[in-house]
Length: 399
Image 1 (cartoon, rainbow, N blue to C red):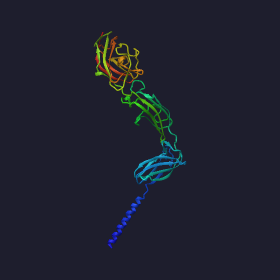
Image 2: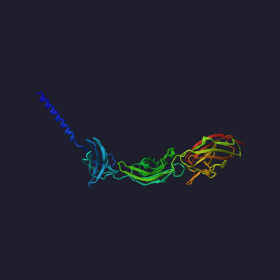
Image 3: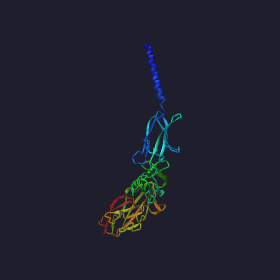
Image 4: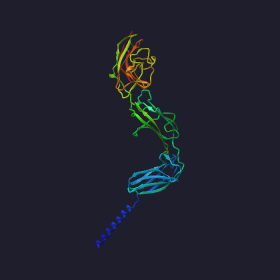
């Protein structure tokens, strides 16, 4: 009798296990599909702008979500994306491929394809009303110049990117290289704030102004992406070539300047000699007057006809109690013309090249003190004084 009871119990447990296993095996791959709410008004007013799509998978599958409009056309929100077993939820605001779907009644379909290629599909209704279907536009998108040489020589060192934004949107502007790497551009402060309707300008120097190495020379796509509050997405593109890019670097060798003589009577000449070297990777532009030029102490580079040339490099001499109103009133080119390389309209000291600079100043005026200090500097005009107060020395002015 006891043996029969054991048999019945074992038999019952086996049947229960089989039932449970059979129940699990019969559970569908795709279930619990829901769309809530089923009426949305995606216009960024904060009320029913999105719906929540939820579903459950009991195994791995390629998952697609799409909407079927009244004409039977499919609009894919997700397409054949691999998913493992589990519960899922995603918000949908009416945008497919960067554009808001028009108002209307749709069938929202969740579709799962299993490892055997069998398709499991469930659908729910979804309606759109008062949707914002107007995408942002970037009118008159412009890139100038389209050949860009970021090396601070004063020629084509900056790029201006501009456009007119037709509606509020988040806008990002990049350079994109052939490998897809992105280099962001910062918007210049203007009349309108970033993202507002109006004209926007980007002033790009490739980081050279901050001493950073610019992107490598080559051809780039200039890409502007605008996305409004509901998700409408717009892209405009142009091209830009970067050439001869790099950070200019010049040094006074050993920071040494030779002034002579050390005692200069009024009416006589103070001379100097120093050596410069281009220690960077790009040519540096220079302008006159040529080494060996004689100044009088009452003159300056402007009175000799060599006004400041933005981006040009010059050796300068300054002195204690200078009251001329400008630093380094006496300036010379980095090398004689026969040692410079002509590139386009400019004359350049090439990478690795050294040159000796000599200049002369005739002392024609009594200084505020009889032994002022004189020193040298390197001026990158309209950019900065790169080396200042190099090797100051007291020179006695006799009178």
